[in-house]
Length: 328
Image 1 (cartoon, rainbow, N blue to C red):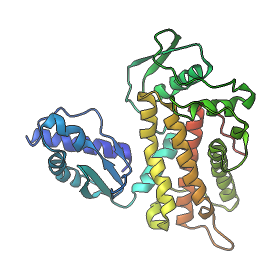
Image 2: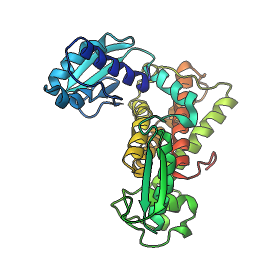
Image 3: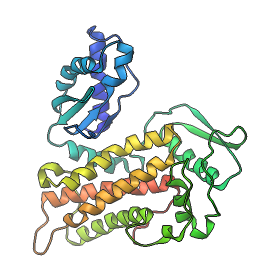
Image 4: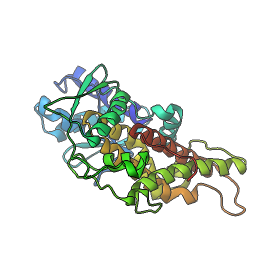
């Protein structure tokens, strides 16, 4: 079950609770499903009970108790645990990670796209400023991933006014200049320094682009060894915590993209790409067989996961207007 399918499962649970008279609320248009936070457990978590507590006039914990059996009976759900103030933590049966990887690979550049802004026109009024114009240009693409359409014009009062860059970023080149302007939060002053060009781990842009290049290299090397990636249950295949981190970053990407679009914050997308890259670089050495080792189902599963991460990195960089080289 993918996060999108699980979101629909949660909404069906809410609908059943309403139909059976257990809750008196309007069924929301969507349910946010993410990887569990600190103190959580299972494969995914949702805050739907906290979201409905106010409209239902009940404590969130009580709403969670009402929803838990409806979610538990869904196909593919093994267990539902309530943690904290009312988070529903959902454990899925075997194949959950394989389904997630398969979805990312099948959708390619469209992975993470949704309908949060479907039919909406987002007006972006910006000042005559380089950073504001780059942010607006990026938001046009990001808003489109959620079904909306952004219209940009120079006008006051501006509703998109990030802190201007202290100097012209053009000497950094197109990729580094855009990263320098987009990676910091809007209220932070960007740094226009040669650090953005450094080919070393301390440079987040380098790590993101290098991680993408590594996914392409892993695919090429696997082909030379005579095998290709095949989505599988990575948790059971290897049980490496670092791979769980990469699966979590993959699952979280649609949520990060939706927030970047609805909150007009492309920096959220940039930061998530860094998280994904770091998770990929932590597992890259376990993707290919070592020495005389023969490719196994675990290697095929890890390769598919790495290729799915490459899909996210390439798609995210493209939305930021930054190139994703296959060789670096």
